[in-house]
Length: 208
Ligand code: MN3
Image (cartoon, rainbow, N blue to C red; front, side, top):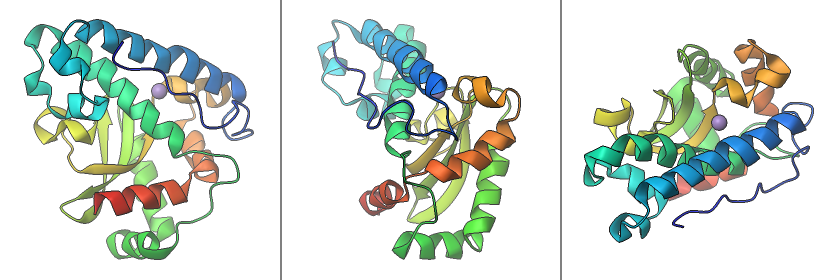
């Protein structure tokens, strides 16, 4: 098997009350696990694909045979996006970014509150299922969103977005429906309490 489900880096109830334990359990143990199973199934026996990291795999979808490209896009994207997402949440997190990242957010968006407002707007207006992202694109911070399990790593021609993701927020209903039902905006307000800004800053440094 090319890929394995990474364990959550904290207990399933660690993000309570903002994200409930049952949501985390189903989201990680069922949804994320299914993406891993299905991307492995799609590329099984193709050594050139199985040897790639999942980010490399989805970053070059045109190298994937056409008959499995859709499965790799959806399930490889799902595996990459969720592995990334879990690490950027945490207990005793939230607050505001600091240092260079804070300066850049201020320069790009006018301040942290203005950034959050723009990010929430991008996430709320994503019709159906998808993700909102903070990316470094050509050295600058941008807010983008993608449909389904698409990632900016897939490039603009595929996903409509580009750049290196440094924060991603899942806005599929499975990420919030048990606790927030149809209130996606309320979930988005709550998630700021559990964003791991130190992790986002590390991603920013790596992307620069
Ligand atoms: Mn999800």
